[in-house]
Image 1 (cartoon, rainbow over the protein chains, first blue to last red):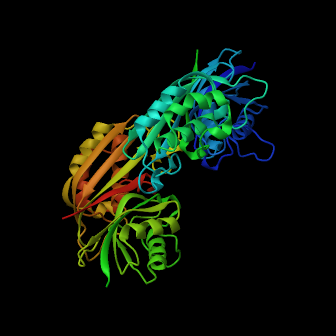
Image 2 (cartoon, rainbow over the protein chains, first blue to last red):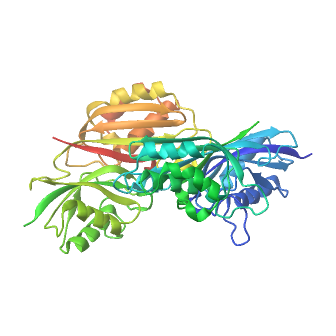
Image 3 (spheres, helix red, strand yellow):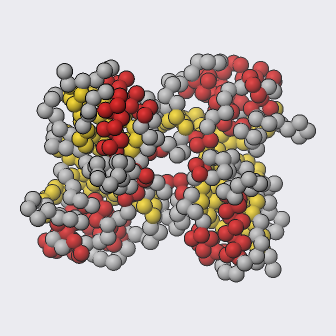
Length: 247
Length: 247
């Protein structure tokens, strides 16, 4: 009798091709989990994640679900699977859930952190999880830009491939910018995110921080819906999916 | 006219063969610095470090010195060199010092941190800079063991290859053990350290933490001078040279 399980997964995305299975590689988190789960459970297991993190993006606690008739208790199952998974992926928890649970469709919100090393020199010890830009940045100006992004907007200007048919309206519930020494940390929570949305938001805010554009431009930028008018897509290594929120 | 410079260097040791030049590899920090400094300064430059960190060990701020007649100002020199160095090595500061300065011989003390991930599962995001052991550990018992190590002792029992001729007496000035969530952090300061000494000290303390041995054994262990009676050499990835202290 198959049961439904919710898991949290941590991964360091540097050498991975993102969460989602693709035709041209097997080195995605979803592929790795399906392969190992199917082997250990001795049945075909499908795994669905809450967030389709891109190549190079990390997760502290991605959430996923799968259905299986496990041959052992759930904790032993993930411990066995962790023994087969590569060092950059680890399942950190498992709980049985009701059989209608869906990690992506039931998610009410997600929180991402973008970490930027803003010191005068590269930082080898943290380079896997932080982007690097030594340009001085005005935190207060970036916070003004962030305030203009909070709320419900059409975020087409902050999306690499906006949906033609579907709505590009999303709600950002919180966007905090803090400095820890030479690190600038952007923490963004919202109901959902478009493709590359967090990285483009951070790219636009850093341009405000560097004085290349003004926080006052944000409302017009949102209204324009034109991707080319927003800032650059920041590199993936700075981005980590922190948590997925349900109900 | 050659001047003498003191530099601090950060490196992530995972893919490096340690600080010290060796016959069978060029992938040491010293080799990389000598190669790049000599190329940028257009003269043969030798670089001497304060600590001979082992293969796989990291440094937040290794200190080294070199003598050269630089073709540009010192800050431009290290910025240029950083452009040639691999991503896991970066020079973070440079200052001109008096010409008798020697990074190793003038060092009065060093501080190392050993980071151990003690949670129930591996932690992919921090695996480069922390060792991993899920066994529950008694922090107070380890602190009692640490107190017995502080001070001046013959540390032959905590050294992989004790000197036959030279003194193996060293002074540990501080040894703090703190828990940050599932991380246990050992911070050790001393006048100098024997080969593998920090890693064997942490290996012995973790055995005390796991109840395999008692803190009360430490004085006899120090007196024995027998390496085989101490705990295991912990893996290199948990160890980081934090700072070197002068004057």
